[in-house]
Length: 281
Image 1 (cartoon, helix red, strand yellow):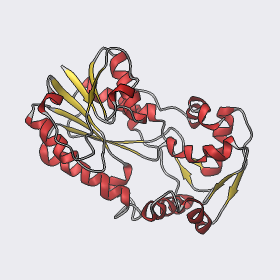
Image 2 (spheres, helix red, strand yellow):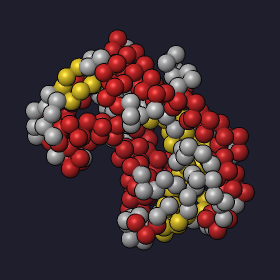
Image 3 (cartoon, rainbow, N blue to C red):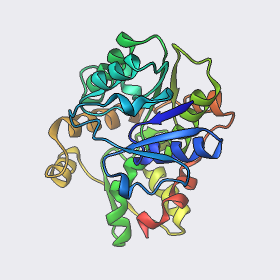
Image 4 (cartoon, rainbow, N blue to C red):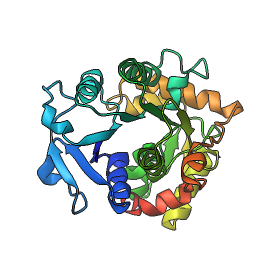
């Protein structure tokens, strides 16, 4: 049988496709631009815009028994409903730790609202779901790339706040473990990187990964709004500032999901920086 991977050319999806293919699984990867997908040989690439509200043809699910569900901004309920109708039995959903609502800052945030909505939509349609809730993605730190490339200090608010950034490869390997092993229906896994680091320490870890000493300059929340306001929606800025403010006194804890599913504790931020060296140099 075949595993269908949505969001297959994204940071997690591309890694997941590679892990599944290397494990001998038949993979059908969905891309809006299949001619540019650049996925491993032997992977079937299907062209579809699943997050754009277009009609979903039943042929997309032919021979598929398992599916990785990317949390598109729209269209997930329709996608999963079509998959269930076509006989797909197992769904691994990429969500967010915010959906757990563990902290007051999460309730009502953009991430909480969106990802919890995706989770509930899938749960309402099938019992064959497994939810992966990663915390902060290490890839979010790519926003510092332009300054580091230019030899400028990294400007960041709340540099003493601490998170446990997770490598996208660890999310992909956790998803692959669920899809390939089975036996995880109805489970929710919280995922994080292996260590909680202050934002100043995160800058230093990137420097260690690329072989340079980097400088960080703490800025105020208002300066951050001014720096990113033309690129980032206000509700996302508010969510980030609340998150960083809260994790000064109470650092993000390390979660066990990666180890539980893969048997290893996850890649360090230094390793992530090495893997993304070209984004910083």
